Image 1 (cartoon, rainbow, N blue to C red):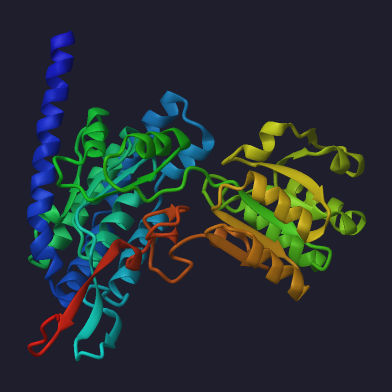
Image 2: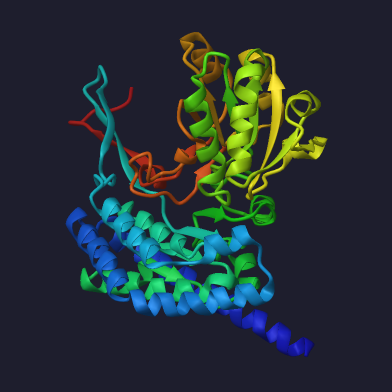
Length: 428
């Protein structure tokens, strides 16, 4: 048995090495592919996904059945399950990416030097990108399309729970590439569930992988950030805060809170902690919490909140650092915007924070003093999404401060180079 296991890992290592070489070979033709050919490939992918809807749903049904038998959580199953509507959304997302301006070759800046040299900073593809993700099969389409638009080959390693769905979606992507006469190796999906494949990607596939983007739970992201030998774009957690200021309109505060928490509880932009200005506890606290309870949300409250709203559980220290990804929210009263900023500074994962307020000064202080990737005013935290930002779609949200921050869309999947034009200049 041990030898068979070792042989399996050896086979996976060879498979991944081959995938890496093929991706690198596809990099140059993809980097110089015209915007028109990439657009045609993307439109072909969207059409293929719609044409293969029945096949994709059949594959997804297998994954869903397996997930139910394995006892996967409700939030996990929500991310895993596909419907006709979600398949249409996938196709629409690819079309939206197709219609974006092609970033490759864009001149970001240009200037002339006193010696006559003309210098340009120009966008270029990043290179071969590895995307490691869990449960969400739609990431196969989003990531493949975004990387193609930016001229990058991509190696997709989806979760074993969604492998059948991802394979069906990937077939549609390959069909689109083929229809536009682009290398089919530009978008590759790891076809095995062996976890050794992830280890090979983290090693960099013998220098053939340039960037890794993980999308999944905390344990996956921690492993990638700890073990990867190539740069990583990621966020570890989405502990998102919503602050209701004393100047907030009550109806707006109620509507935004319910949407931010309950629209989809399993996404990284869902609000996990609600902070309410102590100055409006008498007017805003109970209506907001009653609306949450009516929507089916479990409330974990600090002692001050419990005195006014007994239908809640006492919050523990762990609540302020928990990404629930479920219909649960922690609630605390704070002393104005200063108190909200202090709490967020201590407990934030620097993903997304929102303020509901009419006081311009409070909003500006919130925006200026909080160092998170996304800040919103009078809007739900669930807008923390590349598609909602007009990026067509996103590969994920990055909370680091190098290169990419916030939604990682087409522009964030490019680097740049300098083009310097002269007419015979020599350096003295």
